Length: 121
Image (tube, rainbow, N blue to C red; front, side, top):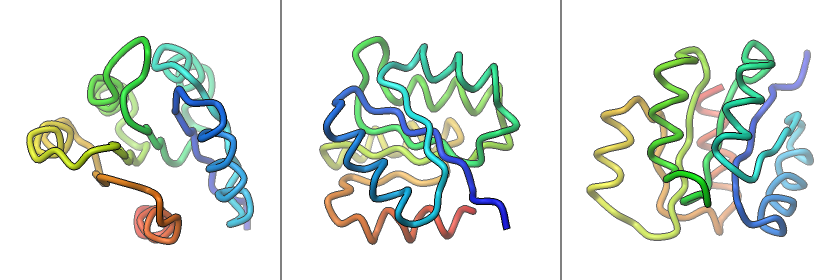
């Protein structure tokens, strides 16, 4: 069976690399981006390649919620997870209304994130 492919978008390089290692250990293929526009470019080039998009918090070039909305409007088949550094009910309602599949207020427990990914894919 071919591993599922995830596009991980996080502005913090160390956090992005640490999470990518965890996801690779769980047999996911990981591509990453540090900015929203970079992620959109990767999706446009290889959208059929990705099964899931994980957006960690806000990015330097756009809010994470905006990226989720853009991805949902252009690439409906890609599952989306938004992870925020703070639990925010308004943000959760906004991203879910814009097609986000899973909203998480934290991912410090990697097992919770892994279970959410497994549930989507």
